[in-house]
Length: 212
Image 1: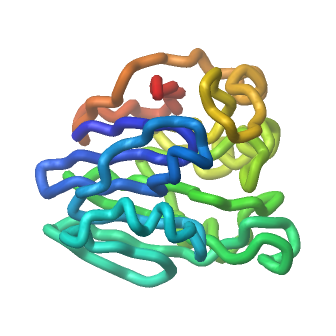
Image 2: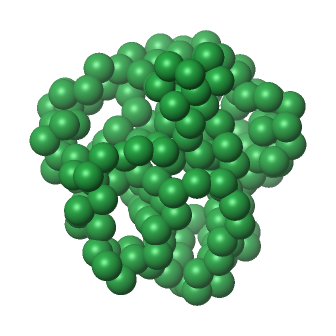
């Protein structure tokens, strides 16, 4: 399995069963090129991602835009309702956390979450994923301290931070360094994560920083 980050919250998971793209974006809005969108599954965490995003998605892709249980080509997806703000969605609206299982590896992408932390019900639904993909840059995302605390609570085997500031990006976000300092783990940088179930760390959390 390969996991690639394209900037902002956009991540692609390539497994033996098929490919999953999470949160593709509008390049004009984000300031980054982004990937072509022709994956088997496309998961959108924002309730209203905008017409520019929807128009980029290939008609052959199976698109998921909210809570529920889904399956495509043997890839299992569960959408969990969350909020983009601390006011239960009254300010910025609803969003969806996604749990994904492919090649017997469980993953969670926290998407556009802007809550101060997750509720007990959301934590129970998220469970104990092998890999946690978490926004850390405060813009509709946790700040570094809250993100680090949540990683400690969930205890994934691998954590991948996203939605932090990048030199060429036009979105505002906090720095990766703040999160790395808070979490207190050595950052292992790589262009993409190549992983299989038997290679997952045991009794520790590995911090993987992907290059966009």
